[in-house]
Amino acid sequence: MTKIGFYGEFGGQHVDEALKPSLEELTEFYYKYKDDSDFYKEFEYHLHTFGGRPTPLYYAKNLTEKLGGGKIFLKREDLNHLGAHKLNNTIGQILLAQKMGKQEIVAETGAGQHGVATAAVSAKFGFNCTIFMGALDAKKQPLNVFRMELLGAKVIKVESGNQTLNDAVNEALSYWVENLENTHYLLGSCVGPHPYPTIVRDYQSVIGREAKVQINELEGKNPDHIVACVGGGSNAIGLFSAFIDNSEVKIHGVEAGGKSLTKGDHAATLTQGEPGMLHGAYTYYLKGEGDAPHDTHSISSGLDYPGVGPEHSHLKASGRASYVAVTDQEALEAYRDLAFCEGIVPALESSHALAYLNKLAPNTDKDELIIVNLSGRGDKDVEAVAKHTGL
Ligand SMILES: *Cc1c(COP(=O)(O)O)cnc(C)c1O
Image (cartoon, rainbow, N blue to C red):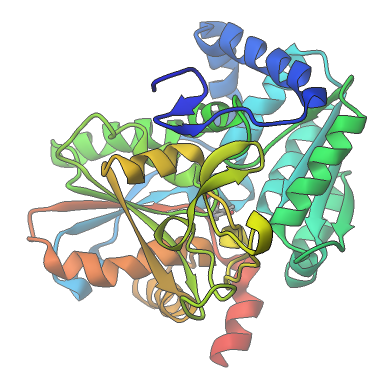
């Protein structure tokens, strides 16, 4: 990191003056508790008893044999309470909100996974919770809307713009500006202004720390390849962070290539976008008219976002990680393949990372090790997949 809040030239805190005091307060509390062992003990206690951590590292023997290359391991974030990695970050941030003396939580959500995780920790820790969700996403994920309401959250469906995650972020930020005093904005990915990318990375880094210990216990060495899907980039950075300094480990981020690489048909930010200012940070994003974010498409709502975390922009620019895109169709096939092959139904987001294995694994030697982050489970996607594949 060159300057605090920057990853290389990316990141920063490009926001309205009105937000700065709240971001400063958050930064102050985050650094105050960053190295506080009592805070982390409490964090780990809730990750364990509420979340079910540590999640296993699963040897996907059948998939390994099918693809005929290196040994494939799945980091089972799908086994977290509520079915995705999102919970790690929400537990960390709600503990921070408690320390700051806040009573209200506001958040945005794409597929609904972050909204559900936020609603759940708000219920558990006694916060009022308001969730902004794009109206189109809400239509795609009615069960998650119901879950959030069941958990006591107020869900506001955003009718502006594309009616997806980008618009939900804008609305949640405006709401926050109007309610700064008692409200914590619980951002769901490693995006937005400093300190969010750093905070979310740190609370998700438990994924990589566990995976590193687990692969060394199982195989006596670090993996040769690590793979994760990239929406905003939080599950990916959670896995990658533990291995960034191990230069022998090759890092692969997989984006949503959607229907085609025509603008508007995909959400492949790092492979197709360009640097600029989005949601308070300098980072890669998909530019449309007048530098506004372009409409995006992905079969998975969780990847349907025109931006990406600034640390990923830096990992791309520095060449430390490589980013690729796979299509909706490839992700759908990977979804079915994992179900057939291993008896595990992956989230459509995670299916993008799995789809890339079809290209990566056959080109690796049998003694190489590959870890894929299985960021979530696919129950929420069964209906969408059935509709697309006629299953
Ligand atoms: C939200 C979500 C993602 C995408 O978000 P990241 O911040 O890129 O991790 C990926 N997988 C699942 C299961 C999700 O719920």
